[in-house]
Length: 250
Image 1: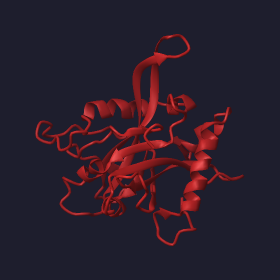
Image 2 (image 1 turned 45 degrees about the vertical axis):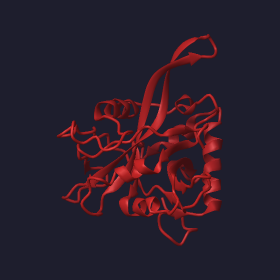
Image 3 (image 1 turned 45 degrees about the horizontal axis):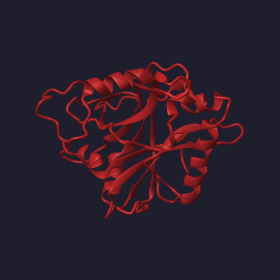
Image 4 (image 1 turned 135 degrees about the vertical axis):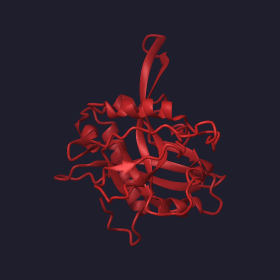
């Protein structure tokens, strides 16, 4: 889905970012969840992830002074006759939490349910302290893949609805460590669903929560040039899924 108001492909303006972010806030707070459900569908299939070209991500992490990479939820467009669709915007912030990069918007939509591949040398390839083991990542990925209805509870926090996640800069840089050169790889933000127990304010007991999150991993396109939704996942590529939720870390 293109954004024609910006002359550089893959970027959006401040005006569109504000508009698309407001669209997300409107949809997630609606009593009727039909728009939320529709925003996570592509041709009737559940969206399982969004992609960014590694070239764009290389430019993002090259931002001088960057400390964090922030992923924010958007919905574009939101107008009569056009199905709204969930998207992601990435941008870099500095040590003072000021935005210092452009807004990079997701370029590709995935609906396949390809499982994470186990590493060939699991004991040798822990390359980042926040790297998530594929067993956990696969559990969370499968839980999202099994979703039949997207509900607001998946985006609930004690501080209000989720607006996105905040990553440390080096979590993005670590994803490149096994690449010999930049090619046509994509950085995919896989949609995952975490399940965990937390206090239930309504009963003073405990409740099982399910919360939407993002798992970052490079994906390599099929060398045969197959369709958009078929790709090869390299088992040795790291998975990052330990970002901080916004709110409160916005």
